[in-house]
Image (cartoon, rainbow, N blue to C red; front, side):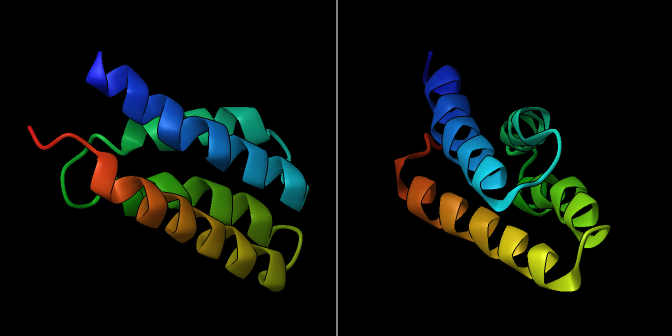
Length: 84
């Protein structure tokens, strides 16, 4: 049950942020980002890479904003994540 809470805590704001930035397939990228978060140590980085690459096809500035958005989501969510 706690994993579902973490997926929701990452997936919803990430998808919303990507949609606000105008990234195509925001829902899919947000969900994949939430699922990749469960990979220890590198999950948060791996979660952002696909979205940043999609944003990079539009502009480098949008790619930077996308990376910052993922950093913000993971920074806010980090302390509430269960440690197991």
